Length: 311
Image 1 (cartoon, rainbow, N blue to C red):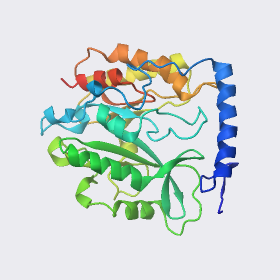
Image 2 (spheres, rainbow, N blue to C red):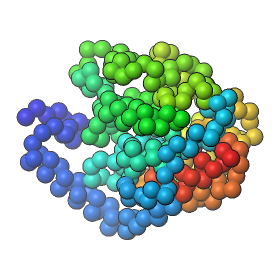
Image 3 (cartoon, rainbow, N blue to C red):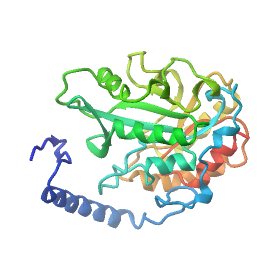
């Protein structure tokens, strides 16, 4: 069985013995974490965490249908997820979401933070050193399938290179281009300017963290709050200030506010349990654009609050 050491951890390949060993170690790590932090598996389905099969009453599958065609994407409020695919394995610090990609889309999430490791001329979805049991092709396939059923919608995908490149004979942009070429070109919006709705319905707007300008909008050209190392109070002040700035500024600039951050030994789900109710309380009832609001573990009510601010 071929294996590759990845940050002191074997990459998932094949073999039930290796998988069982990894699961046992990961399970012990999770148990220790729970003993330290207490029972953080308690769920609040409104704000911070939900099972992967939330009630269909909370779905917002085609909410963008009511957005006028001449509206710029930068004039909207859009729910987003940080490290959107990070939900595999048994280590709490690696998880950032509890919901599958398809469930996120059905609930109304429209911005996705996709982290790709360049590995043997392929793009594997990673959270730092940890493989998330899928690749870039899997992500795009699911997105396009969703758009075929819901052609009024627009999906925004931030593509970032994650962890150490290994075993490649071409550049990350070249592999990304090859991966995208497997799908119809008309499913991607690859211009370098913020589109209006009529330009991008039924498409994936690509935001790249790479310098090659052939891959859509440069992520760094947007107005971003992503202070990911901070104390809870400091981060919350920054989040509120950025949301306020988004509401007051012109709709020509795309604002992106990450509510996710790291502090101490707390895992993302514990931080989200505290942050997401605050975010809901601050957003609920507000009207006018908030920009893209990116969260760990968003529940249906928080997602819906962001969508409703477009009214």
